Image (cartoon, rainbow, N blue to C red; front, side, top):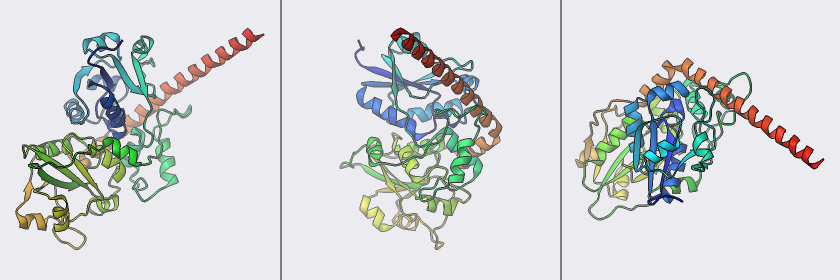
Length: 377
């Protein structure tokens, strides 16, 4: 029997590329759970635990905790939760059951981290969202290709990312790359559906919001706090526009992936997908914008050399917001590049453990089949 109120926890290392938690696809089960639960508690691991069992996290402990708190469907987080989930942990935080995706999670010595709660019947499983993996995101940064952008495709890119950090003994279905296909249902799941109310201050911000990170969270939180009744609209630029002013192979995440990342933030009310780079009078009038905000990062000119914020600047509604956090997407990419060998080794070790589990499962199934055949005879 479930306790009242009904509680669930989903466990993870927090929002961390290096441990599979920086992907928007992890938000989908959180959103679904929040719909059915009275309260959703997220258990986040210490950095040392993640490094021991999975590999180096990209974000610091404090960064991960704050990013988890910024997810709009999370009611509570527990800092420093043990990597192996036990019944004692569930009871301590008054959780009825724990939830994880259908990929297996193993300790450093290859044991199932959910073995105890599975045996007790207090484990629930949800299907992983296909389309983006940690391996894929890291591969995009290191390979410096543009094939992941919304209007391009490359079999060579797919082959390179699929081989990134792969071990010599085969390919695990839990550590790999698959193609993400955006659907209207995914967007509906993430959208709040809330319209601006009388008295709301409608605030517009625009950008790439690539690899949605703690710098973005701090900026959006600062914007949100500018009003007692904020309604924050984020204008996301298309991939080709971002690449024009950022260069290299940016954005790392395409516009479909970035949309869901931003929609999951509790400080965001609405997202304009493919917003124009220049904030025009038509845009301001259409959304009835009261305030336009930009961070301390550089403002690049539009294609014709004009100031993209000229209109709100003339109207006196442009505000430069200092969030106190200077972290950028470039900084995140540099963290990954700096630790490339560690991430490759992480993927190889992870896949080797998973392949060992798969082989053991196959052997058990073969033994059961033989036993059933002998019983018939």
